[in-house]
Amino acid sequence: MHAKFDHDPTDTPRHPIAVVADRTGLSQDVLRVWERRYAAVTPARDDGGQRLYSDADVTRLRLLRNVTEAGRPIGRMAALSPQDLEKLATEDAQDREARLEPAPEEPLSGVVASALASVRLLDGRSLDIELRRAAAVHGLPVFLESLVTPLLRRMGEEWHGGRLSPSQEHLASAVVESVLSDLTRGVATADRAPSLLLATPVGERHAIGALMAGLAAALEGWRVIFLGADLPAGEIASAAMATGARAVGVSVVYLADRDGTLAELRALRSALPRSIPMFAGGAGAAALGRDLTKAGVGIAVFADLAALRSALAEAAAGAN
Image (cartoon, rainbow, N blue to C red; front, side, top):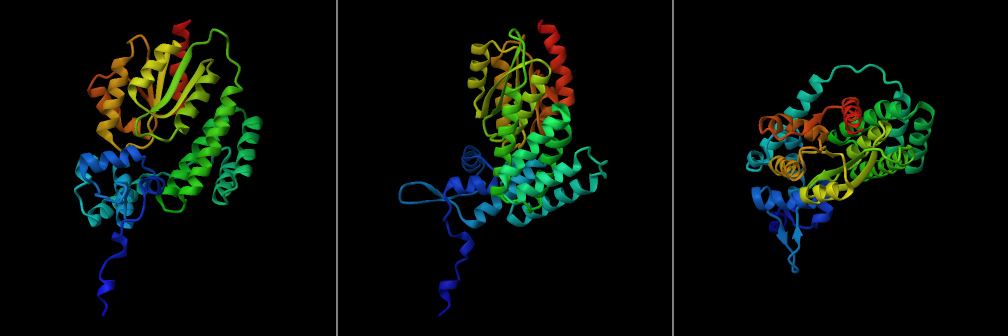
């Protein structure tokens, strides 16, 4: 009599890949790679051959994202059970929390809190006004270091803690990206200023890190060429040559496919002349720093914008 309830509803395939990408923060390319190369999940197919994922698939993919962002290789993690993944994700989160030292009061901590409140309310207009006002009042270097950086850090903590929804995170990203783009265009640069080409590699859909680097570069007198997110190494290298870029920078925030991203960065470095310095930033790039150094790839990885600005100032002096 109750046989119809034996099926676990969380195993019902019902989510198309676009919905899963939105709910997990993983790009559709990464989802396909994880399925094809690592069998992380095995989605069903509808009558038209399109992938359909279950709730259990979505939960598993979120756990895989969490543990790979902590530095664990997807090749090993994909074979683990949901219980083992949950245990590792919890351990990683507890370890991060234990290592966090009380931070000194930020100069713009009140603005950060207010901006985060606007994000929670999905109030993009208020967030935009708060960001632009802070940039005008405090100056762009302080804006970058004391508002955007801590705001993104807080958003990341809220996201990992399950206290920020995909819609809230997407709205905030869209507003911050718009503000950063406008501010960068508003920085005056000399006609013969050296140009820095910025992008993110295949699989990295988050462009904010690259845009922050662009504004920092503009403040050091560079002309910024921003290509956007999720680009193959060949496209980035071709654009750099076509525009006469003096340097190339990439941002890697989330390391969803460690081996794939490492291969892309190595391919990009190989496709560029050695006379063109290459920079990388973001948590994902930092996690790859040892691998890049060991392989002798020749990419300078920077932990923060202050280090990047110093390197750009030095590179600009050498280019003149």
